Image (tube, rainbow, N blue to C red; front, side, top):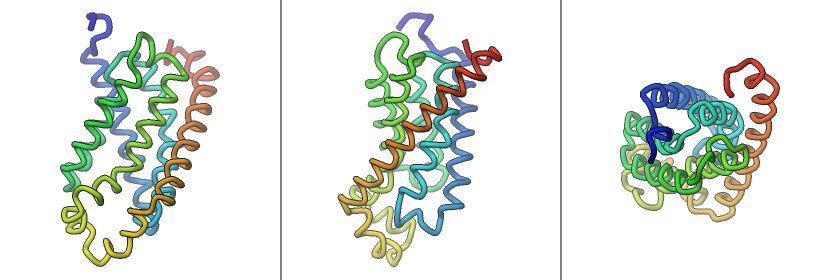
Length: 196
């Protein structure tokens, strides 16, 4: 990787600030959706993909270098470490690495279409984190939410139909969010000089 494409201290700070902002929105939406969250990820992960798309797109354009989605997903994983689910760091690390594979190539973080694909994939990774815990770490997951709750939601967490519905919803929400983001950036951010 050339020095031009290496992340600077300023880039790390930018990714950190924007990532933390996404996590704050994520937690806030989680609190609002808490009565539904274990029964349908659609009520939680879809809105996150939609609402946080402008934040991601702005972050990606401001940094414009490889590593944005990797660091973003690592920070997302760290949030779950703080919340007592360190096994999810594995999931988000893998998701971040795969995101970077998808974004491989010169100028991908300044390309609307590539960023849209990257955000959709990253949003899908996020939407499946509870399924990942349920399938591979059921005892840990059960201890976190309680066996009684686990028994109630087990059919949902292992339901191909609900997982497909969630993936479709998250994909559509992420896509709409990126389209809106692109219009916002062209109309406001680029004109005001926030991004080039």
